[in-house]
Length: 163
Image (cartoon, rainbow, N blue to C red; front, side):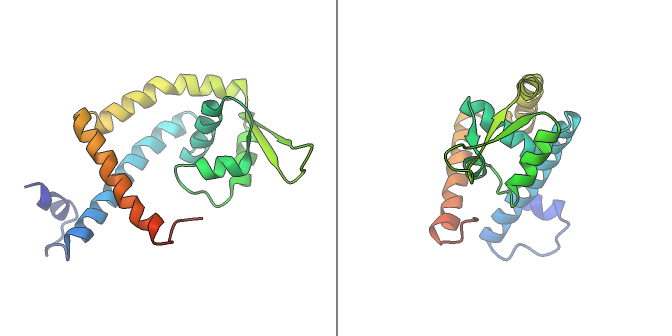
């Protein structure tokens, strides 16, 4: 029975207090497993998940992007986008340029070295995505995404959205 699986995995003696608790713990457990697997892949290429996310955003944009805009587009909120960009610059994966009109604005540009690195990662990452969740049908994947988006709405609508 699927609803007992998490209880067994956690070796929980009593049933969950509520379906909401069970669903939240399922999300957290799944996220932990996925983050571990993805993190392992990113480390093979000398990156963290957050660094990969910045590079993915920059590649998708196709040009320089303000650092605050990058921060807004991140999958996971990072408290210190400046430090993250510093580390990418030290690895020669990004270049930072101040805006000539407004010195407070910093633009970040992806380097050719980073583009090459992302190209090397594309196939292994796509394979990992398939390995992690490819056993679901297209319809199930769409439904899962819809339900997760619906679940996130409660956080965003209650004013507790992360900064």
